[in-house]
Amino acid sequence: MYGVCAFFLFMTLELPEAAQIYPLCVISLLAGLTTLHVFNMIRGAIREGVTGGLEGFKDFVPSQFFAIFAMIVIYLVSMPYIGFYASSILFMTASLLFLRVKLWQIILAEIAIFVLVYCAFTLFLEVRLPSGSLWEV
Image (cartoon, rainbow, N blue to C red):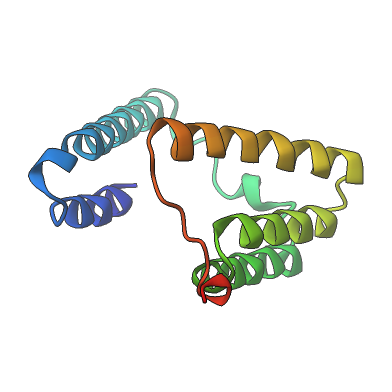
């Protein structure tokens, strides 16, 4: 998490100064919460000893992980070409079908997420999402 904070801090410092305020607050909050979590983990390990290890990975399915990872890479590569909304619909549909989610739940999730994204980013924050170079004339 500290690496993620450092990456976003590096990217944020390239923004105009007026646009840095919100990202710096979010990065600071993330770094602070990560530090709090690390302290809690250390405190618990001192009190009770190390009680866990890799038990969380006992049900790990490598084929499922790598398939979803490949879908994420394809999603990120395709976004500049076909746009945010089209690539997101394809990614969500493909990944949720791969994970055997029911079709009605996929449709409901896509509608809810796109309404939230459209309202938050397009209407409220007025952020231009990638429209895709394939659609430009």
